[in-house]
Amino acid sequence: MSLHELTEDQREIRDLAKRFADEKVAPNAAQWDRDHHFPRELFTELGELGLMGVCVPEEYGGAGTDFLTYILVLEELSRADAGVGVTVAVHTSAGTLPIINHGSEEQIARIVPPLASGEELAAFALTESGSGSDASAMRTRATDDKITGAKQWITNGSFASTFLVFAKEGDRPSAFLVRSDAPGFAVTREEEKMGLNSSSTADLAFEDTPAERLGEPGNGMRVALRTLDGGRIGIAAQAVGIAQAALDVAANYAKERQAFGGPIARLQAIQHKLADMQTEIEAARALVWRAARLKEAGKPHTVEGAQAKLFASRVARTQTGEAIQILGGYGYTKEFPAERYYRDAKVTEIYEGTSEIQKLVIARALLGEAMRG
Ligand SMILES: Cc1cc2nc3c(=O)[nH]c(=O)nc-3n(C[C@H](O)[C@H](O)[C@H](O)COP(=O)(O)OP(=O)(O)OC[C@H]3O[C@@H](n4cnc5c(N)ncnc54)[C@H](O)[C@@H]3O)c2cc1C
Picture 1 (cartoon, rainbow, N blue to C red):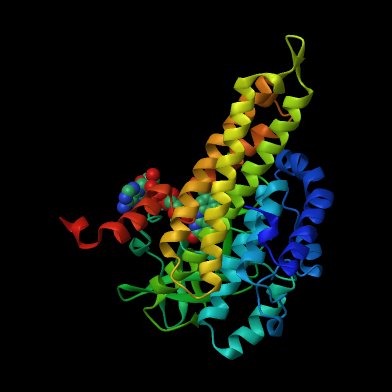
Picture 2: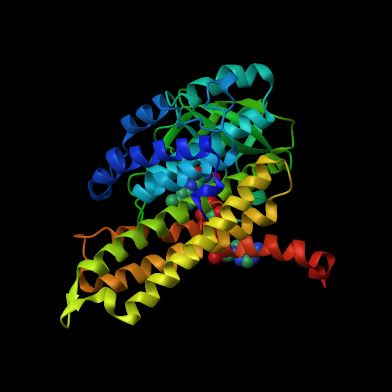
């Protein structure tokens, strides 16, 4: 994909995010990873630049850009630190946008502005210990707008003020908003992960916790699936950002590292790896931009988003591995960021729908009724 395809406004905001990522995020990413540090203050700064509500309409305190611009911002932030990328992705597309899509005018006007400004963070709480892909098996329940149950692995869990929570009323899930200071709400545990160490992944408990309804009763799965349709495109952009970071480090290293009397960049084996990396990353980016443009145009994008995430996450996993290979032993050490990219990339094949679930979405559209046999 070429930057020439972008409008001036899109390029301007992408450049802003790139400068911020290079100056404020990338230099700290290794330390945050080591310390498992969530850089809360960074999101206030991002908010001041308008990057915590990039595609949120201006009337609700956002920057009012199109969805592709938001995707460009996510790629740039994730290139510097995938933990920062997922924090912004979940906050925006899984936490804030569903309030705009399903909330009343009063709810939007009250809840969205502090999220769009980065003053507060949002989270999306669907997964439970016994239900991930099979979200409808959730056990959290709601009665008279009070929630009881537990959620697991919630991004931004320890820092969010507003939670979009899914709970069953009768046998159908509904969507609710819960404030972190509500009685009966608790963050019970911060998860230890393989990567994404600068992001928060927490378990939550609810005991008769007052909640306000988002959308119609029994409509929770529709809210969740529509949210994930868009969210997935953001995770695909995160994967592209991680893969691009891996390519950048590998290409630079290939020009510097000497072996057998010259830089390893003159070895065809290394040239081919780098050429494949770049080609696959560009292909992934093309799928991501296509899905983002369809979403922006209000056209169906479920399959295209699934394809973008399936492909981009695979590229991120395999090509971060190739970057380590190009760096040889140094790639396996913490002296270079390639090993962090490798650890961070894996999760893009898991959250916001595993790769197997993306294939299911794609196959369903392809095969329709024939899938039932
Ligand atoms: C770092 C991190 C952050 C996360 N953030 C959030 C968050 O903010 N909010 C939230 O709600 N959740 C979050 N999650 C949870 C994440 O979305 C789930 O882990 C994911 O949806 C998969 O669910 P599961 O782990 O229960 O796996 P399972 O659903 O138990 O799947 C196990 C395996 O079976 C496969 N499988 C399951 N069903 C099918 C099927 N029908 N066909 C083929 N294969 C199938 C899966 O692909 C997988 O390989 C996060 C997870 C992680 C690791």
